[in-house]
Image (cartoon, rainbow, N blue to C red; front, side):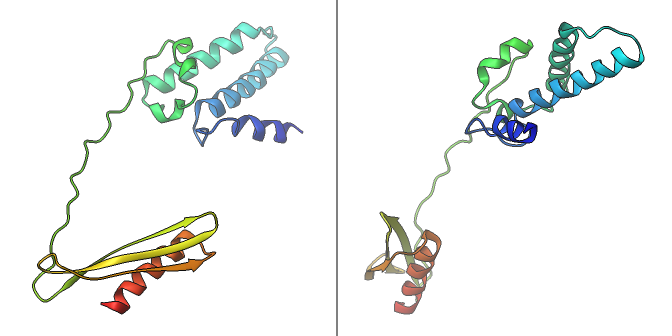
Length: 163
């Protein structure tokens, strides 16, 4: 039963993966309840909930200070960040990469292909272009009900066969 509840908690958000704050908080709470219980039993130190809360907060603060937490570990739960007295810096997005078409060497052709699956029907096609940029041939075919990877590969194979 506890394992099921942990599993439900761990995967309760779309961004929750290994190392996510939602998982870490639960594990820290369970750990500090355990250690506080042992302290109460063996050292006669009272079980104070405020002590457990402080230990969880302090551990998360230390993990952040040591740069063991990154922005990705908080995705979907950024509203929790201020409660731990930390500041997250959102990652700088990578600059766009310029992508452009280059003509093949003289005597060669270039094949550009694509595949698509929509509502259970797959189709693919492409264009074959020579070294001057002139269209030699276009092609397209319906493949029926197959997965996208197979669709893409079939379009590539068809382009190679036609070239």
